[in-house]
Image (cartoon, rainbow, N blue to C red):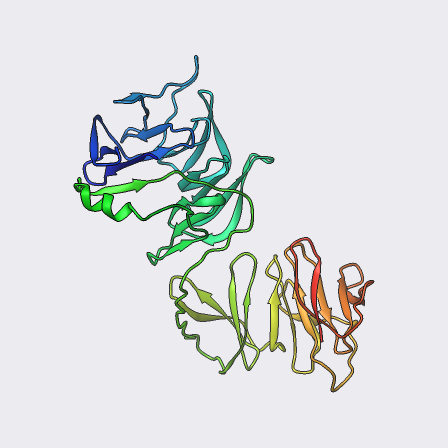
Amino acid sequence: RQMCIRDSVKGDVYQHDGNDWEQIRNITAVDVAIGADGTILVSDAGERIHRYTGNRFERLRGAEGQASPRGTWIAVDNAGNPWTIRKTGQVYRCMNGVCSRIEGIRASQIGIGPENSVFVVDNKGVLQQYNDSSKLFDRLTTRAVALEVGPQGKPWITTKEQEIYASAFFARDESKDEAIARATESVGTPTATSTTIITRPTITFNKNIKFETIPVTARGITKPMEDLLISPTGRILAIDSAGNFVEFSESARAFNKIVLAKTPLQRAQMDAKEVIWGFDSNDQVYRQLPNNRFEKVPGLPSTPNLQAPYLAVSADGSVFASGNDGRLYEYNEKKKRFERFKTQINGQARVHGVEPDGNPWVIDQ
């Protein structure tokens, strides 16, 4: 088990031998990365990459006729190849001494695991994962400012609020760690770098959640607030009791602007294109038009005094509703209306969600 750190002030690099820290004196570094195969790389202030050879660091060169790898932030795959982020934010992948830029991404943090999956934090602070099939990064919804990755390909992140989110914990004996730490002399101002591990399964972050009170400061609203909408793109709206939609501002940390005034809606959702769908007080379904007006969507039964209808939208554009007759309906884009879904459950259906590929989930009432 290897550990390297750099002094975050001086850039000195230290290696821990299990008992104490030893400085590697022929280098000052900006970043340190350790691969699953034991490869140790550092980057210097000139974006040059150096490999540890056992007692010193030596400049990492490209293949014959190729430029040497360069970058400020670095990670190492399981074959010892570097992935780098330049000062411009451009991401490069180096294979056998040949480096190529990954299109469509600018990033500030990068991590690679033993199974060769790759994560970055992009320049907007969003976690992205490399897709080996498309050779591009896929954007996730998690926001972060720093990235490392734990066991089973589960990332750990730090948020701008300086909170740490862990998605899995290490199955290892930590009983001797405190004794080793007490016996080890402190050196410099260390910044630790650990091996990173990422896989493609669903990521769940564990944390003791602290809720923040978000004020509604927009003028002209009528409290109480009736519903909250979050689109797949991250846009957040709230509806007041007069049908006004107010938008959340990240910079103000408040709902400070009315974006749609006096709509007929009381409950609503947003689809992947940020189109709003919702119900009025009489359970009539409406859909937002490009001119921000709302049109009634026909097709659902209007049977009084039965269960309230429910609505669910999917990232692929599918829209489902459960009518107050207890049946499931799907929106037909060509006919601009809801039609009874071809498959029904033996009971009273209440739709609660739709998978990204359009499969609805319902509860039998």
